[in-house]
Amino acid sequence: MRVEFQIFRQLPPEPPRWQSFWLETSPGATILDCLNQIKWEQDGSLAFRKNCRNTICGSCAMRINGRAALACGRHVGEELDPRSPQPQPIRIGPLGNLPVLRDLVVDMQPFWNDLSRVDPFVSTAGRRIPEREFLQLPAEREHLNAAGGCILCGACYSDCNAKEVNPEFVGPHALARANRLVQDSRDSQREQRLQALDSLAGVWGCTRCWNCNSVCPMGVAPLDQITELKQGILSRPVDKTAALPTDRSPSHAVRAIRTESLPIAIRHRKTLVQLVRSGGWIDERRFALQVVGRDPKGLLSLVPLGLRLLARGKFPFRFQPSAGAATVRRLIDTVRQKGRDPL
Ligand code: FES
Image (cartoon, rainbow, N blue to C red; front, side):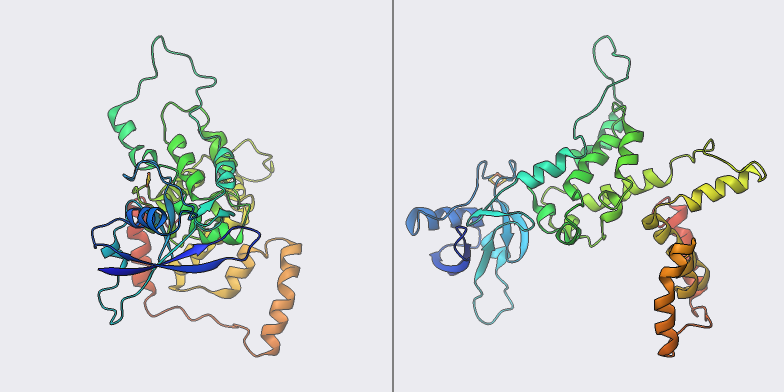
């Protein structure tokens, strides 16, 4: 079969362009086989990375038809749309969210820099060194299998929407690795790791778009790892020693710490779930007040929006619960009983 490959060519500072190559190939050939054939037979200047040719090393990650994937793991037949009346070209470009060095080769340095931000090695500091080795139960080790399978190919990083709009976000690869360490019974830095990730640059920067899970070629499911980290952060014991007002009961004070000291991203999620659980959908007045209107500054920030809503006759004076509120409540409670998100 004759197939057209459109390949993104770029040698900065030259402007990028798409270049077409036609190949005689078969549905079972991998995209990497085709790139090799193009390079060896048609244009030796085409640049791309490869190594193992067997979905082990992660070198050949690139965007194939708009999605990050391993070129040695995708086949021509999978990339052609059988429903299309006209044969469609297969488009190949470099990974996203990383600067291009040449053609399909990107500079991975930002990826490694972000990984190093989570201190990606098991820490045994402060632990008593056993005589021979750190012991771990088979079940404890098994829990690490998914995150431990990461080959650091960069596919999740490339297609991460959060990384695209928030350069400070550490990225799904780093968070998956961080959870691998947080869940590791040998690591002694669990609390410090969770504390460091409790921010918009950490777990709360994730938009939960699911792209990372969808493109990961190794089944690491970074979004699931991030969710586990969030659960770890939210289930940490409250610091009861933190400056409690003496004229209040401890239970009141603990509740106050729980809500007042929560970062806004957590408060946003908690409030959203609470309101949806009580009314079936969001009561926008209470939502705004509870998320940002808890202090004079936050309250003031709501005034312009409130005035605009009033002027346009859109201010929600009354809240009508959803007809399906009871069903929504049952759903949320069922999810909670199973020990999963939502908060
Ligand atoms: Fe190693 Fe593709 S060449 S994963």
